[in-house]
Length: 221
Image (cartoon, rainbow, N blue to C red):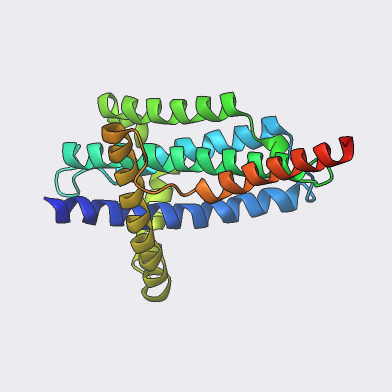
């Protein structure tokens, strides 16, 4: 059972990596057509919404039983947990970047203006909601674009060199998912994460604030 779960997470890691590669080419094309213009926050989340929706669509297609083209409950549960963990991880990364840029000050020119917490959460909820909708209406997931993504991912996965590279990425994705899920379960049980990845950054931020306060005290004296 554990091996089946790990194999499914590993396969999804390969799928996510190849999907990200294909989507990266698509975004590169958009950047070329726009002449490198900086996107507005509306454009950023419009593109991200489509990315997440197609990702859950393609993920759902990989949850179907290959032999009978039926929904595999086991695959759906694992895929749902992986998608949720993946989206939450992306959200937390954006939060950490935002906090880091705020700490550095306005002298920088970061992309923090392209992060909106409410919209980010809304996009994630929408994506998970659409994934749940596919369970009851699977035919909606079988559209020309998602089928093209599905077939392209399989073709790239079967390519000797590229397939091996993405399988290596899938292995690291598996390890990352295991730690993130351990974090989640441990947090539910004890109220503390298994691994506090952002503790160093938080400590640095706190020390920075303390140093600034000390400097102010010295100047005031």
